[in-house]
Length: 391
Image (tube, rainbow, N blue to C red; front, side, top):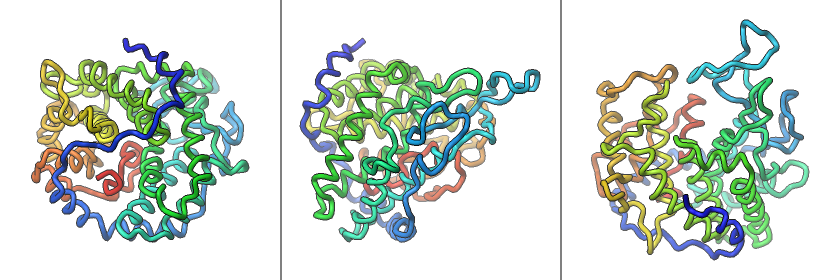
């Protein structure tokens, strides 16, 4: 295993990461922009009218944390009919509708707002989008009365068992497009250096927690999509804060752990296909690996082009799953126990892969899929909903 703790002493020493150096197909990127333009401006108009809603806006009596602590409950855990009032029992793949989800919904809303505003800013360079984004960014990260604590000790708790778990760290994948939105808008004159420092300071603290707390260690070592999403998040937050040590660690982890242990030789993800939602989890994991390549590729290390000695690569993963996105009826594994009819949507791996590898067929399929899903489960598992800020 990579000597992870060597990097921890270097958390604050890096400079900003170099820009991605892969050579995308700019013609396909412009086509994607044309598809999304009207939707982006419509969503941004909505976002301009939204007031901040943070974790302090709702509380749960079941939370062991305080008003500034993010709280959520394990999705697949239910009251035991044979022991009412006792510890919850697991029903894998079946979401308990009585769980506390207000903080998760608030963070998803925050992500949608910043993603929409940053996308519109990228199209128009209109400063109004930056100014309103800062209202929300201050509320979440720097305003003492409403900010969220930069830790996740009380996420995906289980009644009668755990006040929080490392598995809950996956809830903050919703901050991915918040961070990318900041990177898109940070050079605007409306974005003061003091405010930018405050936001980066929050993420630097959260990175320290993610990489030193036992929950973070547990999630890093998870062998399925949770481990992938830990790398995706740490990569994103490290790029914002300029933490070169963690960026290097994440690149190596993608190469030496994620690809070799999660992807089969044919490009599938056996740890996901054996679950009760094999289709949705496979889409989700491929999206996350795709975003790792998007975030971490630079002039020295292009993960889009990387493959293991036996040929496993992000391209192999897309090539395996694409036929079952184009024709879901051909899916060779069992159907998902929930939300089977709601997938696929406009998956990020399709548009990112199309642009990176110059594949117009992938882009055409992406164009034909739903770009504005409303099913909460789909939105929650689609943290990248604004491709323009990534292309």
